[in-house]
Each structure stands twice: as C-alpha cells, then as structure tokens.
Length: 254
Length: 276
Image (cartoon, rainbow over all chains, first blue to last red; front, side):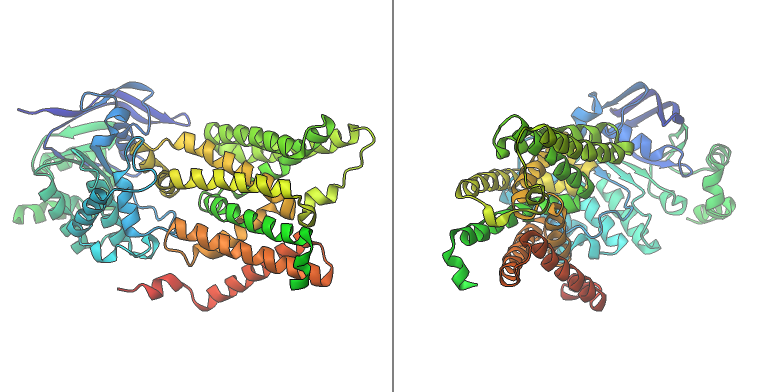
C-alpha cells in the first residue's frame, strides 16, 4: 500500500517575473527515499520550500499529509543548505538543536528536561554530543551539517527534507551521511536535494530530475536510459560531474 | 568621584546610566545579531518628531516621545516585512522626516526656546527622580518580554525560516522587537541623546559577541560593559568638566578600538579555549 505524503499538482512558481517552476507534478509516498537532481537554479530548493509552505505557488496545489504545507510543518524535518551565514552568532550546538523542540506557543521561555534528553539523543546519533558546548560557527562545514540534521531529527519528523546536505562534506563524510539516511529511511520518508550522483545511486529509491519541470523516475537504481534522459533534461548536471559513462561503469561494478 | 555622590543629580545620573545600560545590553544584542542598526538609528532620530509634538501640544516629554517612537517603529516594522529590498531607503526617509517634523514643531511652539543640544547629546545630569521610576518600569517591560520570548527570539535571530516552521510567530516577534527598540531609545535619549544612541546600543554587543557562548551571555556582558562605559564616562566628564553624553561615547569608542586591536592579536579567542 503506497500512501502519498507529498502531492504537488501543476505547480507554477516564479521569482521576480522569472519562471522557476512550470507545471511541476510530484508525488512522494510514505517510505520513499527520493533524490532531487538538477543544475543550479533549476528550482530544487524552491520545490522543497513549497513543500514546507515557506513559499506559496503562483498556480497549482501542494498538499503534505493531505493538508496545506504550513499546517503540516510540525511533521516535517528540514535541513537547510549551509551557506555559512550567521557564523559569528553566539549560540552553542546544543542550543541550535533545541530550536527543533519549539512548538506553537510552547517552550518560548525555557525547555523542559525531556527536550534536553531528546536533543542529547539526536546529537549522539549524529556523533556530535561531545561538541554540544561549542559555538556553531567554530565547527567545520561537515560538522555543522550534522548539527542541522540533529536539529531536524529532534523534531521527530515523518518527512525529512534535506537541501544539499553534502555540499561541504568530504567523500567519506558523504558516504557516512547516506548510510545514516538509509538507516533513517526505515522509519522516515526522505527527500534530498543533491549533486552527488555517485553516492546517491546506491542509496536512494527514486530520482526526480528538476529543470523548471519535474521528471520523475520511479526506479531503485540509476539506469542507462535514466542517465540518457537526465542528460537530455539536465545537461549541466552531468557536465558538472564529468564523464557520464564513468558514473555508469562504477555502478555496474557495484 | 566619591564627594560627587553627595549631589542628588549625580546619584540620579549614575542610576540613569545603570538602567539604560541594562536595557541597552538586552536590546542592543538583538539589534546587532538581527542587523537592525540602521533601523534603530531611524527610530532614534525620528523620535525627535515626538519631542516636537510633545512641546507643541503641551504633552509630557515621555508621552510624546514614547508614543511617536512606537508609531514610527511599527511603521518601520511593517515596511521591512513588506518591501524588504527597498526598506533601507524608506527607513532613511522616515529618519529625516521625523527630525524635520520635530524642528518645525519646535519653531511653531510659541515663546519656548528648547535646548536642542540636551536632546541631541543627552542631559544625564538633569534626570529627575520621576524619570528614574519610568526607566525602572521600561526596564521591567523589556526584561519580561525578552525572557518570556527568549527561545523564540533566539531561533528567529539565528534562522528565521526554521523558526517559522517550528511555529514561532516571526512576524509578531519582529513587531515586538522593534517596539522594544522604541522603548529603549526613549530611555537612552535621556542619557546620551538621540545622536549617540546607536553607539550605546551597538558598541557593547559588538565587543561582547566575541566572548559569549549564548545570546543570554551576550546580553549580560553587553549590559556590564555599558555600566562600565556610563560610569567611567560620567566620572571623566565630572573630573574634566566635559559633556557627559559625548564622554560616555568616547569611553565606549576607546574600548571598541582596543577590542579590535585585541582581536587582531588573538583571532578567535573562543575557538582556542574550547578545543575538545
């Protein structure tokens, strides 16, 4: 039984008059591990923000758990892209993770002990507990990314959205991260925006290629036809990755 | 200095400096981390319109300035939310209009020669006891609001989108924050004047940010630094017969440049002490 969690129908979105998404259709089912691929500026982040209700579509409908996204927001975990803003902000790792325990009209003054335990568990899972009293800006990009994932996990989400979580992580870190996401995927539905075709292919269940429109491939593996189709729809992505057949050969060896 | 304490005006001045320091520590921290410095400057200068209104209509200084500053702050809050990309221009316009309104209303006020300088550069030596009580109340309001919304304010300041997703009313808090800036500004105009408000709101948080592990710590350290600036500034102005507001700012500025110099010697003091 495949239960749809995210339903986007004929979604249009433009920013300052420039179209970002055109008649985009996408359905994410419970238990999916979906990767969104596409060149820079193709609308991947916009797609995530529409699912979160941070942006409103110009046309079309978005439903998450059958509700408007803004009402479903407390069931979604979100890991934003780390663009290194606010690096000098005086906040510790633990306090950043605790932000995930904020609720409508609750915890505004102080967090109850249960929330601290939840934050500890999330940090331990991400192997970042020992850094709990460090300032967030003093961590490396990869460490900061793990803290943001812990902050998303501590919300106990049913749907986890990650925006380029491996952008500032080395190759081993990337593999570790996808192993962890695969483990999480046993209970949580995951949508990840990424460039890393190599790592992705062995972990995700399906792929959607975004380039103003959304092309969905309901395949557990990246096939040759898919790569050709993606080469057609998102040529920049593949050029950025070098030789497409190298990606394929690696995959066949697997 | 000690013999100066026998004068009531000097005791009041020290207390006024203390109360202003507490509010400036908390609000200045929010201003610095949310990059609201220019906006706060706008509110502070537009407050002059409130002074003009108060004199023209014969209202009390506090009522006129407080009401007008709150009004301007709310307009600016709405503007920054609605037209983000041109908000700085509109803030600049309100800044100038507020001051011009104040000057013209004072021109039109019959037979009254207001000492402009005391509002531009502060008149900490003439703070009456009734104003001290008002400052206590305003401080109480500010501290109550900051502590009851602390986690929401922290989340919003650090990552507004994430805070919004967690159900933090970021728009409401934006208005609340600027209303508190207005309260704070009215209070500090008494101490250093509206021209120098920005220095007291920003210098201490700027220094404190480097040595604080949390927003709360930054507020506390900023407040302590401001107490130091106002007390030492007052003492120097008393000893050398200088304008107190300007002297307080010069003390703060000296510390600001020393902190820049120390920073060059030790690039990241926090990182060095917290290596695991």
